[in-house]
Every structure is written in C-alpha cells, then in structure tokens.
Length: 366
Ligand SMILES: *Cc1c(COP(=O)(O)O)cnc(C)c1O
Image (tube, rainbow, N blue to C red; front, side, top):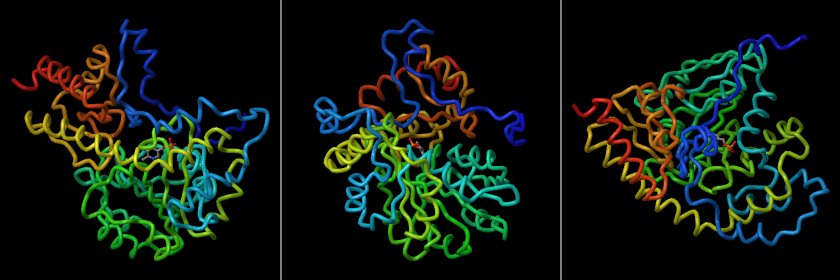
C-alpha cells in the first residue's frame, strides 16, 4: 500500500503500564499508579454525583460545537466563545495543529526533553523536527528563537514542561515572543497551569492579544481529574481558531465529556484543595531528594523528575514489583532520572519508603 514514507519504523505511543496488567504480572493485590500525572484525588465530587444521576440519551450525537461547555469555559477564562477550540484531549488539539500547519518542507521547533506528541505528530505530517536541548530542565528559549527560519511553522513551548516540571517566567517568555516572527504559531502547552506557584509566572492570557500568533492549550486531564473523558482546549485569536476548526473532527467530545468538564470547571474550590495537597506532597519528594543528595528539577506541576543515581529502568522495574508504577526517565529523554506523579500523602510516603530500599539495594547510598 502507499503508506506515508514517514510511517516507516514508527512506534505507537507507549503509555505507563495499566494497573491491572501489573497486578496480574506480579501477583499484587494493590498497585498504585503514579506514572501519568493524573489527579490522585480523582475529580470533583460534583462530577461523580452527576454521573450517578445522569440520564443522557446515548443514541444521539453530541453537540459538535460543545455550546454549553464553550460558554462555561469562555466565562471562566474570560474570552469570547469564538476564541476556543475543543479537542478530544489536548492530544487531539496537537493533531489538529500539526495537520493544519505541518507538511514536508516546513519545520517545527520544541524543547528536548518535552512532551512526546509534538514530535510524533510532526513526523507523521512529514515536517522537519528541531529539538533544542533543555538547560537544567528549562527551555533554552534563546536557542529555540535562533532555530527559527523562514520555513518554521510551529514552535512548541511547554510551561510547565513535561517531563521536567519547570515553568517559564513571564519575562523570559515575553523576551522570546518578541523575537518570534508573527507568521510562526507559538503553542503554549499549559497542561499543568493549575499547579503553578512560581512567583515569576504571570497570567498568560494577555499574551494572545499582544501576540496574535500565540495559542494556549489546556486540559481537563490533569488537575481536573478527568483524563478518561478526553477534554482539552485551545485559546487563541478568533482568526486562528477559525482556521483550525475545519480540521477538527465534527463530534470530537462526547455528551458526557462536555457535561462533566463544565461541572468540574465550576468547582474551583476542589481544584484549590487538590493544589494545596499537591504542594505538601511535592515537599515529601523534595525532602527525600535533599536528604539523599539527589538532583531534582524545581517542579510547578503534580509530578517531579529526579536523578536516582542508578539505572532508572531498573528502579522502575523494582518499584513495579513492589506495587508502584512510575516512569523511567530513559523513556522520556532524561536517562538516570525517574518521573513520579505526586500522589496522596500516604502513597508518597509508601513509595519513598520502597524507593529508599531499592536505591539501597542498588548501592546508591554506599
Ligand atoms: C498530559 C499532557 C497532555 C495531554 O493531555 P490530554 O488532554 O489528556 O490529551 C498535553 N500536554 C502535556 C504537556 C501533558 O503532560
């Protein structure tokens, strides 16, 4: 068949192992998954209550324009309804963007390591991928700006960055945007924006007015605890959204997804409480790293990336045997490191106890 040449040797995304698989493989009763940055507390109880009582007609197509969710998000964010594009998760938004803007002959720029789907989708479209190494977990925005040429179509900026957790300060972001030509789309992926506490970070929404080539991307999969429902969205100038909208599949969010996302967004107290708990949980990991002199990156997210001073694939495997699924940095472009989602206080304490034993075994503390 006449496959796109770029599909040769391409692998499907390898997610963290599912809990059930690890239970079966290692004969474990209880397995804790701290691998995909889901909210360990789940979603708002208002969503759960809705799901127990909802009487949706599943025979009908959803509202393709997601009107109710659109109004809710527009009011919450403070933008016009025409400034929003909804996706089946932000993964879908990434696919829409690459499909609309990338093709053989153009290039796209991103940090390394960063979220894998930017490069993956760009490769499918046959565009050249330019990966700019991070400096200490942070985007090298000067080098990224310098890599732009007349064939650059999209620059991906992930803030806070996955997998390093590092957020970009407002002054740095603005200095970068001032250097980007106005016909290059800058996608600011803010999947973890709810967790940010860094004092140098400022509200990013005004940027889309100052720089109409900026698109913000947010999701209900992380802090909102709705990863299974697949809802993400982009915020940009109406002209940018209007160009992207025809590329979107007509019914890319389900009726239930639209309903629960709106309910979750209206329960900001719940999000605040989750973020508070996350700060305390983060401290458990930071204290552990400090105690054992392990290098970690300052995280403004619900995960932390740190050096184990051991083979991180081995650490991953050993923790899995003990009932904890995390991510090895080897699979994320950060060899030797592990990325752990910050769980509940008890989950963090248990994981760190096991990790201490594993690192002891591996001779790290010798
Ligand atoms: C999790 C994540 C996404 C994808 O989120 P979905 O909305 O579930 O598709 C996008 N970007 C980053 C940086 C993420 O970590």
